[in-house]
Length: 515
Image 1 (cartoon, rainbow, N blue to C red):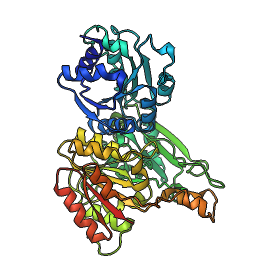
Image 2: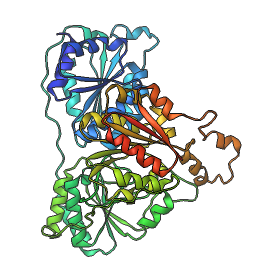
Image 3: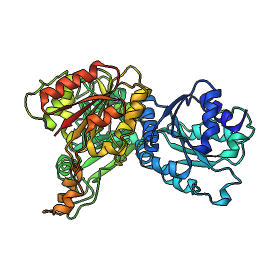
Image 4: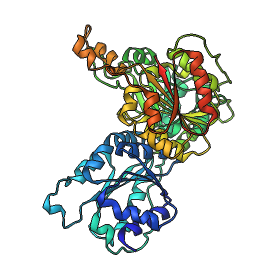
């Protein structure tokens, strides 16, 4: 077998059986190997950011990495924004990046680039294979690197001749690091803080936001009286009726300061100390009050489940009923104009059980949580890295990871344009994704940011740079052109009817929501 085939067989042996691809000439032997070796699901993406984002969504829901196949340095560069998001989310991804043949690189052909230099800022592990005999071994190492908790980005660079020359067979996957045990002294110290303090917060992130771990957090809150919050954006938060309700620290600085001002001690469990998303003139970057003390129990890569269990034991909450269990609540479908509240009511009223909500609503969705808290149990995925264009690709990967579950993508129109090609992949794969695009015809978040940075009266040129008109984007036509059915709605009743239609089918459906 050649090097490419040995790599594909090694990926499959390591349980990496999905590849999100956008190949070029240098990767043709890998593409041919996909024909020769059964078992790899290959998903064509028309833009590399769609491939890397899909791998992120796949890992968030499946808990094991997919691979990507990218073309040389420019292909990797096109995928970097969503690799940044995946890295911030703690997602494991195995990137396979084609390279010129080893003897061709020195000729400086047009596509020659510093691929390792491009990869390093968004990768935990980078390696170039310079021999076909090493490809399988390096692929196995990449899988092990991607599986290091909570998940890492591994980038393997594959020169063309190492793919077509004779390989060395299938390589064994080396052992990889497991989640680190938490120091019992940290648990005991946190327990003391929680039991003694009246103004304490248990701030949760990462694996702490899975359903079973939230129950433990709810027991701690019930026993000690501490509050529970999460960071503004989370890789995955299990929510809904019967689960523990945990609200987010708001995005807006003033609201965050108000929420956090009452806490003088914060215990961190898989989360970081709260800071503003950006710096603003005359506003603080640190969102907690002066003198607030932090007590980190567990980080992203630690054994958060065991740490929470230990904390339950240390505060004596084993037999305590958890605080914050959400009762089923379905808001009425409103009658009237579309606004963030009416959208939240429609989602809360109709969201099906075990849905996966991929949220890139940016501004429109900031207040969605209260009216969706009592919906059927579901998972909610946010953009951890902040680079827009994450939503449609992550929804693609989540749908492939979770066949049989409804994926609901909540998208701003400006954000969706970054990776609109994902609609074609969603249609081609016939994925069960219902998409709401909030069409306010602007980069609405940036209109607000003008004010936040002190620009009180922006002129027409500034406003024009943040407006999505001349011409207006027609999302129903764009979706139809890529094989996705859809409709346009202008009031809350129409939105509810369209959402029901999308949920009733197991094929893609797009709703353009005129704001």
